[in-house]
Length: 355
Image (cartoon, rainbow, N blue to C red; front, side):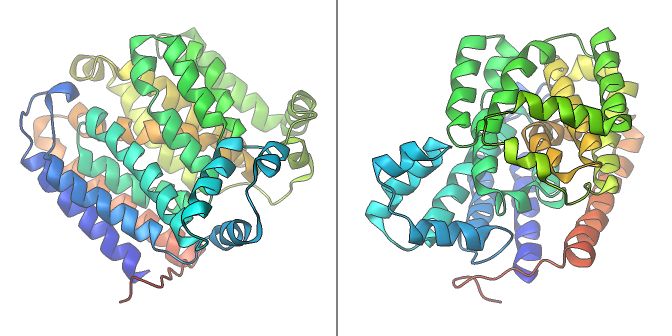
């Protein structure tokens, strides 16, 4: 964990000073441009930590898949998620060492996420801090394909905000080539464009509650819809539900956003779409307490939650802002320690980064 702790410190310090030395400081995020060089240093730490690892989650399986397969065109077309296998085919022309695949996916995933956060976050250091301590950074080293797909789809935020469905569709379609589950973002677009905290919001919340209460019937219906897809095999997936604490932690920023919804609309007029996408994340996380597999879907929406969280501080009075800011840092630090040290006992290893 030493390297992971060091990475957290470097990313937070660099991104904090990136905002401190921002070129223009105003209320609207479009006017806040963190220092690019310091932001690049924060990104470099994320990429190096992730890309130079030798373990974590499914890393071992991905390395074996890279070494054991010849990524011919016939092989790619016979598999699902063509984009990811095509990427591996290109990389294998360069090297048979799977480290090149780990580093490339780390570079692409983290770069896309940091670029979006750079443009939309109110406090870049808070978003990147929660990206790590909230668990998404660790997920990027475990579910490599899906996190890369999520990062690609995350860049469609610009067209979600503008209401340009055609370009949004094309980006999501590209993301689905790396993991087909990204296609869920297509129907979500139309609901995300609706006014937040409206009747639509109530329907979504009620639906999630009913899905949890009647989980067995909900999954029966879902897997009928997924019949003959690569996800049909998840029907027999039974590893229990995800941590309820994770859902509670993710719900707090959304609750505060609801309480301060009028002020949020003033300081961040584009927050409607971020709020709605964050709400979807909570819905899937709530359902995932019954079956862990649904937590994978929430990944696409958790990225929006870390943008929303960066505005939570500004919803309080000026005298309370520091208290809330430090409160977020402390609470997420405790959660990070609990999840990675106590609960998961993460052991980071690398052939390049030694401490």
